[in-house]
Length: 332
Ligand code: NAI
Image (cartoon, rainbow, N blue to C red; front, side, top):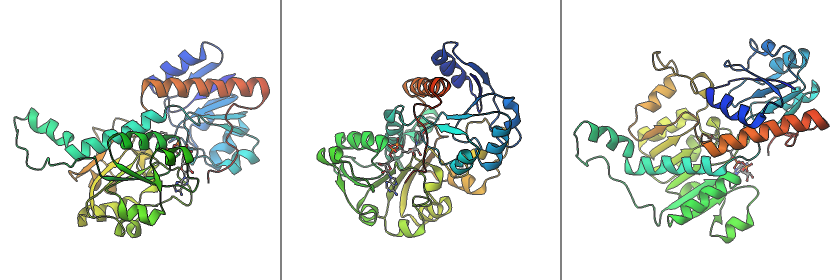
């Protein structure tokens, strides 16, 4: 099958070519999928897209008109796809429901440990010969309460790691998981989670219900000094509200791997340009904010699994008309 791979970085080429083994004809396109670039597919039966590719109705219409039959997402999340438009245009959408929950969960832990012990600041200080400890004070994780919003694949792995640190782990999820509850996670209503947590980690999908879940009203319910970690999707957090929370001191630390307007920033080297997003630029000024550019998934194991499942989806679609992991409905 001819496959147009959008947002293709060198690592996408490496892992996809390895998984493909010459089965499909892959064309790697560095550009993001957009209204403008959709016509580059040139009749490819499948389009392979990532999290910041545009899969809105007009783009889907162009893809359908140029002969695309399958959209194979290299991601678990599919909030960026207009599924109704895809269905109406007769396009099948496939995703990678699970690759390495460890990759994202461990990245969330990396953000927590860095923010808590200020290793991001210590790194620069020590290189400049500054060995002062003022401003680097952290806290023991043992005994602290960690609140997890969303105990799916990633949230469960994250819960087990935090239980291993000796934390009390509470969670909120419309579908509580009995196994993780048996291992020591206590399910509580969201408001209770906001009020009781020293650290709040967001591991839920972006849905209408979770859009701006962390807003001014939610922050007002939190403990003073709370740490908030978001490795899910940017729009789960209202960035302007967290800036207010940081300024007032209610939020003591903020770790973000995702940002609502990340499509204009992430995955590119913009170091020689001015950042025009003032909200993002303001977030970067806080010493207790740590932002990574959507790298939670970026481990060898996750990239191998993403590539293998993506090629599996395309092969299954080619031979049976149905991918292994179709996206059939909006998440909750
Ligand atoms: P999953 O589908 O296994 O779990 C999501 C969980 O969230 C489910 O248990 C669901 O019931 C729960 N949930 C849904 N709505 C909720 C709500 N309103 N409140 C609380 N919980 C709610 O998904 P998985 O694999 O654990 O991934 C979670 C999210 O992480 C993905 O949707 C994606 O947005 C994000 N992600 C981020 C990556 C990164 O590189 N930073 C990589 C992979 C995923």
